[in-house]
Image (cartoon, rainbow over all chains, first blue to last red; front, side):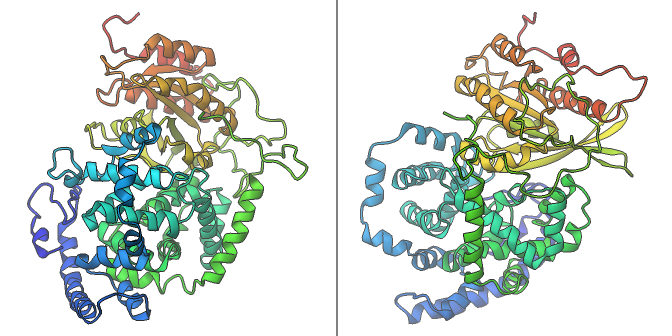
Length: 340
Length: 261
């Protein structure tokens, strides 16, 4: 993203560097203020990253790389780094021709139909996904989803995957890489989130509830008192990995960490949003107002300032050990299975 | 086959266990008194005997005099739930500007019903079957349900019965329910006749109308009728004539064609 796109304040509808139309009421002045500050950080990070990449032929997972990733991957290196740290690159290299074979193989008509229904309903606000765009990313998206549905038959197609694949295509600009990254997310990083039973999703929603109980007990108590189930307010956060919930730039910064550190990052983001806005959430006195609050807390400068936001997610929720999460997952899973 | 209710949870002995209580919280206090057996409440059969009757819940903001009600849109994927909602909320229909709904989402709209402000929190749901566990979480809290099919999609109409089964299973017994045949502007693509929708609705004792998010046909009416019903249920004035949802809908509904009976 360059400064050029910030100078569109007078146009009725600007487009960001990913092709998304700005909403009509987009606050250009505030955004420009933020972006001019962020640009300094982006430049500094870009220099650091190009030094790192110049020194090494291959990127390996280590503390330095992890630290670098938490501070943001420059957009020009994003596809490569995501591919490497998620294991997608290795899988792609070990299975040459596999992706294309999937596309040439026999197809499940029901799956194709489900995917087709969502083609015009994936990012209609992005100029690259319009039918009239050249090149039109709809065909790329269709291919990636069809291939994935036939590769991972247990999952097939689940709504939400269209948005995730769409982002991957926008960043990698490569069909096959998008496929392997989608596989990293759905097959490994978020196991059983998208399969028909959605056990992974249900489990992690419950785990979030338990974590809120530990870390922001007043909010947990409020939810409990008014009988608001977590799935009502956070299922979209978890299924869409914050696409269409948080600003694009912020989502990408979250994904940088998601590919390296795994699904735990989703808890960090959710807990940060909740803890930061605790006072506001607690003002709600009834069911619909609580739901309104959970929408409000995903808007505003707190989430637009992606660099500060990403620093917060590693401090605000406090320690979040994998041991704790795994233990909670186990108990939540047992609880869900007992409920049937 | 979609829509068939999931099997009852099994107890350790293999017999169906009593449905688990609300996973979170207890029953909310009844703020709106909703009389039983009211028009528009469509349940033919009761809830399982072991299911504790949830008190009817409504929410009000006493200071502002605003009634808040929960409405839920359900129906197959692609029947136009989101379009209908956006049409109602913003009065707009932009072809190809809608995104598929993932899980569950909502929008608010405040209506003025006979001088009383009614805040509708309208929950839009994903039609895809695997999201049922997510959408089930709201059924109990919905005061009204709009069940949609697409007049140009036979399968979506055929699935209505399965949806009704699911509604009986999960929604409040006295939930206000209305059946909507959406995309009524489709002329060439239409495969479900209005009479078919009417017949099915009659069978289940549900108010029915055809709507079009594209042309705006009956969109406001559908939501207004529901808001009126909810308002009348919640604050019955002694001398006020009883509001009859069925009659109101019959009187106000507009037809697409030229040959309205």
